[in-house]
Amino acid sequence: MDNKRLDLNLLATLEALLEEQNVTRAAARLHLSQPAVSAQLSRLRDMFNDPLLIPAHRGMMPTTKALELLTPLRIALDQVRETLITHQHFEPAQASLTITIACTDYLQAVIGLAVMNELRRQAPGIRIAIRSLEPPRLEAQMARGEVDLALMTPEEAPKVLRIRPLYDENYVLVGCWNHSQLSEEMTIEEYVQLEHVIVSLSGGDFSTQVDQVLQTLGYRRNVVLSTSSFLFVPEIVAHSRFVALVPRRLVAQRSDLKVVESPIKSLGFKVGMVWHERNHGHSAHRWVREQIARIVGCVSK
Image (tube, rainbow, N blue to C red; front, side, top):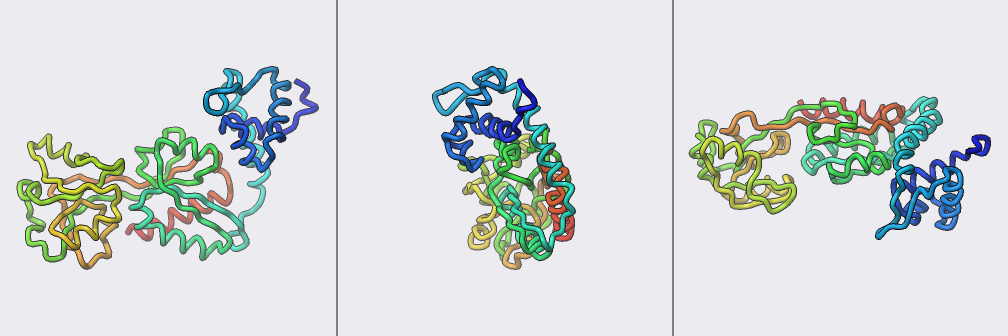
């Protein structure tokens, strides 16, 4: 390889081709025409003396050499991008920036509005995209720059991503405001006899981790409704005789619900902030992370 003729644009094209494994999608990502990307792929093949990508049933498949190149290529290009960006001092009031945040519906409801309002107040030129959290795809989405930041349970995050804990959440039992069977002194025997709504994030399940805990204790609760979102649950129980376990912060401002402690102790989860190494040193992204940590700290108290 003649290093004197090295073209960084070609390496950026190679990164896009290896990640997308499709010339058309790579061209769209690079804002180039398909013929231009095909011509660059031909030059890359000559440069590395390898086909790099070969036709497959759907799109293209990387060769062994291409797979070996991908990780060091990403690292090298990220370092170049970082060099071009991080020397600039970030000024929120003058910044023009788009941030994509992935999180669950619960977190959108509990802290989403506060985060969006405060970031926009300090940085009027910022644009914020909120998208649904997809843990199995998160690492790839962050590597491709499709997601900049995720708010989620840290235990569910891919190990290669950076994590910052934010707060601990616990579950409370809720029902309509005049539900006579809800009380702080409720026993597990009384609890399991009620009609329960549960949240199945995958959809359609009538059993959760709570039911596994109950089973070890010799109990089985009466689950009558399964929904895929926490956001609907407060409305459902407010207008029925159903009850549900929900995160405390989700119903903190609801005066139309009766809220009692769960008879099953130690039910809860952690919430954290997750990001990719490629964004770790970026001054704007670092500022956004610090602001979110501060905002969430105030909201979650």
